[in-house]
Image 1: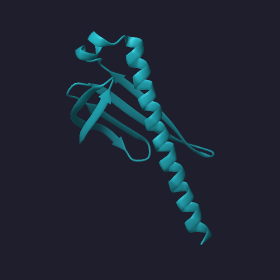
Image 2 (image 1 turned 90 degrees about the vertical axis):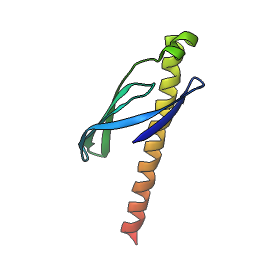
Image 3 (image 1 turned 60 degrees about the vertical axis):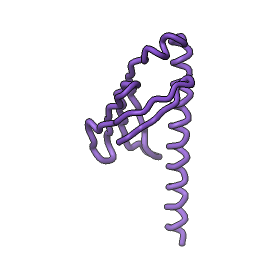
Image 4 (image 1 turned 120 degrees about the vertical axis):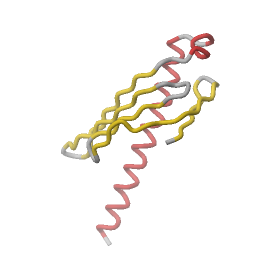
Length: 105
């Protein structure tokens, strides 16, 4: 898959490759071309929903290291991840709401 990201004002684009996919359990992928990332998602059923664990490793590209401290980059990345996770939570809540509505009909 193709991806793009703006990090600290620098645009990155590249290709992503799925490494492992176990439906409803695990998803791992690698992003390359500027931001080299390994991302893993683990999903585990819990009594009232699903526990989601995300594991992320990445290399800081030279253009960013030259202009920003590691603390700035880490803070920017955490802000972006919180936004992504918030979007996932919103989508899951909307799906749950639609499912509840269809059951009550």
